[in-house]
Image 1 (cartoon, rainbow, N blue to C red):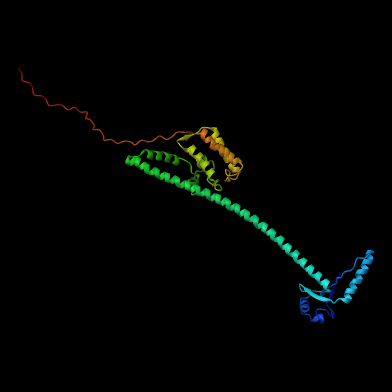
Image 2 (image 1 turned 120 degrees about the vertical axis):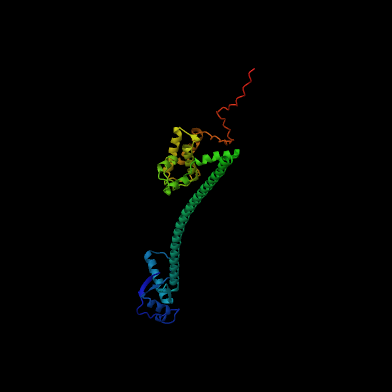
Length: 331
């Protein structure tokens, strides 16, 4: 099956399908205007494989090709604005080559699309992880806001009860309980609210904040994990409250170990939700456990209302002398 690339100059052969000179063919005119000055001549035939050497087989093949060239009409075929001239079998082979090139191009395109799809899948997976973290952060923030709202309502409840105790003098047992619980809330920690005292420059003593919570106001910006907030608030409540006290070195050591583990983990959250316990989770558990063994609690004394009484009259220190009795008549 020889394929020869020949110039288009001086073509005057006739073909079976055209019946007139090639230069009158429309596709040929378009190809010539496109600047391609060559065409491919292709001839294909079959020859029996007889006994003999490779040299004899080449001889038989040459004879078959010459016979096909002399007996078979040549046809013309345009593929992608390129001319092919040959016998029918040869031109069928051109079609096979063309389909093979198309399949190879399609396979390259499919491979490229697979790569793009894989990249997009990875990006979608990353975005899903970011959304999951965002959802968890929003849930923690909502929980913190709800807790803050409950604490505020407790303080307002305490305000009314104090009014009943101090002004109306008719506070009930429940009012005294509300006042006692309110004292614990007011003296407890609230790092979420307290840090804004420093962000707004209302307070300029961050050392006091660190004594309470173990971190500076801007160190916890990247972590709003509810469990971390609760632990730091608990520590602040213990060290600041009049109703709790601890002199245990274990209390301070466990708190310092938790802060170190939290810092090394990048102030991350979700450590208690993981399947395996991390260093932060272990340190968190140790500190929370020591609250029950290393902290002494003394309940606040209930203030009883002072019953007002009318002032007693002040007795005069002066003695009143009765008028002198008239002298008795002498006998």
